[in-house]
Length: 127
Image (tube, rainbow, N blue to C red):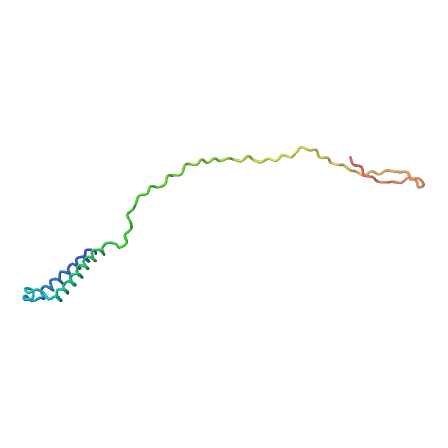
């Protein structure tokens, strides 16, 4: 594709130059050109050269990526030691203490009441 652009531009310039050379009569070539015709040929030649240069430059990318630069990777981190500690099971021991259980019962007893006589009463006894 790039070669086609270059050769098509070069072919157009060659045809333009040959056409200008052939269009002039022989007498004009011998005498030289007028200043206006010389200026026109110069402008057309400059456009032709500009087209060739532009086609050549257009083949290269305008915004090329920079050349790759080798950067050494950072050193690996130092190895870490992993220590797994198994936790001891938690055992809760009850404090040694005595538990007193009161055993209570109700007793029925008789009591002498002066002026009245014997009376039955209840009392609670705990051991």
